[in-house]
Length: 119
Image 1 (cartoon, rainbow, N blue to C red):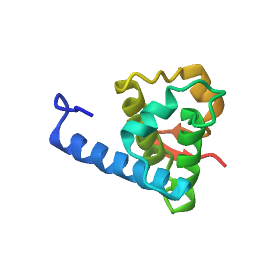
Image 2: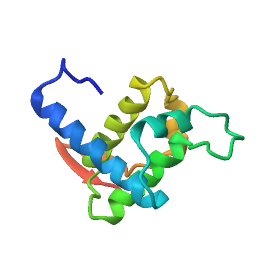
Image 3: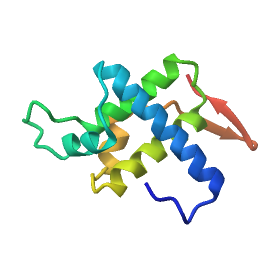
Image 4: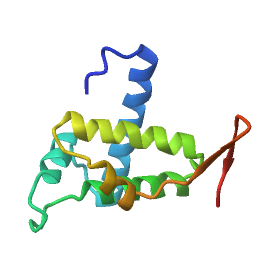
């Protein structure tokens, strides 16, 4: 993905986030699946046995991160922003309403400029 208009730090963070997503996919499927194959399989018809549901992948990725010690809502949101951008950059539409309905992120409550996690 090209993030040339962003800062070099953002590019490094997004590269790391995408690598972590790739590791999750490989762990989840038990084999190496390239980013191009993830995109291709996300564009298939939902009835195709090779179809990968992008919303389920993102939701499972959030659960995977949470189970591996990354439970900060802001961090999880940053990961999902990166993964959503990856899909959208590759012409896989992520509909906001469907995303909110299918992907569960921890709620973040802002009170007096402090972040509080809602259980």
